[in-house]
Image (tube, rainbow, N blue to C red; front, side, top):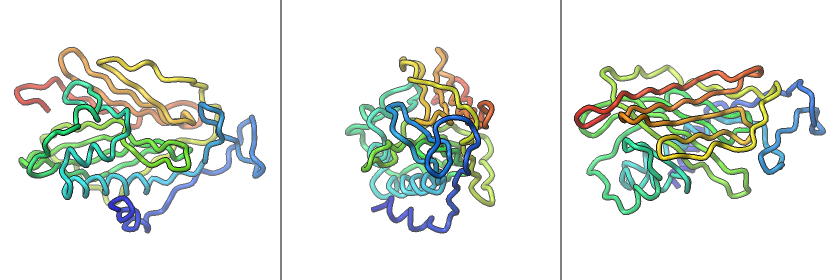
Length: 244
């Protein structure tokens, strides 16, 4: 219900669609380059960043109404991970955890999305109930199935000395559907200190790692037609005292 309401509230946001490609390879009847997932299934090529804005707003609303940990658990994918500050399986860590009296708040400032519209990231400002503030980044994915729905697969936040300035509008960036995207068949096996993922069409690649001293990094690379560009590079220093 909260997700449906958020989608209605954001119906006025313009959905962004990628144009036809000009690269070589298999083509659909309309002449566009056919995108294939890992399993060979044909992927959609229309990306709608407003869908992720809606998810982030719905998550924030659910956190206020249902509790922070409950909302994060309900919106998380089965294999989602989070920093606490070490990487942990989110569903295990959140299960039966008592919600804080008040919830954290998140406001998306930027959305990056794969060409096929199935994977993306939101990043922006966050505020904690204790009055501290900072930023967050959340990676989202929607399985390519008839009943597939958005779920976050990685989330983290960090404190800042100065709040992030709210933009006039949410910035959006979409992976280029043209160019010979490198062929990648699988992600590296996750470890206790690192994990990586990519969209089915390989136009988004993301990585997260924790160093032995507790410092951590989240990187998101977006395909630009001839190579990848790092569009998110969050670096969090080693915790001191109560941590970031």
